Length: 213
Image (cartoon, rainbow, N blue to C red; front, side, top):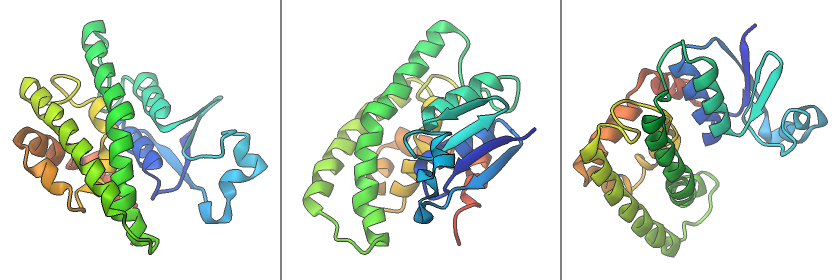
C-alpha cells in the first residue's frame, strides 16, 4: 500500500514533506487538498489533522501531521531506503538536531516573513512593507554569518552529509533565491555553495516539477 500525503503544492510545509519522501524513493500517492474550497476544514480532513493544516501523511495505520514530524518519521521509518537523512551515532545526531532546531526557531521565522513580503504579497496584489523587509534582511544577514562560519567546519549543517538539518531549509530558500535577498546568500561563499547544492538535489528538482505552470 502506497504512502499517502495530503497537501497543497504551493504550501512550503507540503514541499518539505514531499522532498523527504522523494529523497527516500518512497512510492507516494499525493492527494491534493483544495485549500480554496476549504477542504482542509472539512470534518473528514479534521479527522486527520484537528488543526486543519497541510500536510498530513498516512502510512498504513499511522497518521502524522506537522511537516517536520513527517520528515523525521519518513527518515526513521524508512531508514533502509534512499538517502540516509539522520545520523544513528548519538553525537552526530545531537549536532544534526541542533541545526534542525536552528532552522525551526531562527531561520524559518525570518525567512517566512521575507517570503511573505517579497514573494507572496506580489502574488496576492498586496503592498510590500519595506520597513519590515529592512528589519528582517538584517536578521537574515546576521543568521547567514553564523551559517557561513558553520559551513567552514563541515560541508553540511549537520556535519559531513546531507540530512534533515539541510532539507528543512529548502522550500523557503528556493523562494528567497527569486528575490533581492539572494544577494545575502551569494555574498557568503560557503553559504552560496551549500545553497546551490541543496537546491540542485534530484529530489527537490522532482518536487519543483510539480509546481503549477
